[in-house]
Length: 182
View 1 (cartoon, one colour):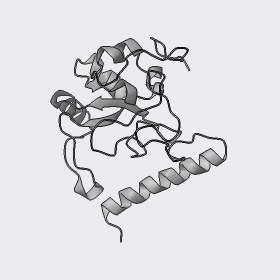
View 2 (view 1 turned 90 degrees about the horizontal axis):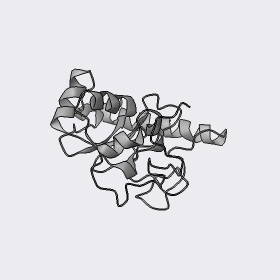
View 3 (view 1 turned 120 degrees about the vertical axis):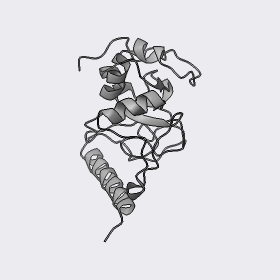
């Protein structure tokens, strides 16, 4: 019988296999190709700044694919695309809504998050926290461009953690200051 941490690893491997299968049929290639740089997403994803997606800050293997990047794909129904720096207020907020990110779950290989840790959040949960006044800071260069479908760029910029060399989108990128209707 598999331990729960081994089961988590097995589930992650299955997700990656599914992503590979989707890519071979012309689907999303999240977590498929090998990155040229360990600090840039291996699937060619772009950040909200229109630049190559950077690794989520912190020591944890964050993201839907547990790759360390806030990449997304067809199986990521929660859209875990906002690279956020945890705060005590946000951790309490999300725990009260049924998503306890602060309690360690060793049986799942999850150490629990603490203030200052980076984590890929669902765009809708981040937006909910922003409306409630408890949104954590955002690493713009590590936040996937799909976040713009839910949160305007100006709102994300207002919560920037300042870690990005440039907070301006690249010339000619598709980033906009309002959510996409797509």
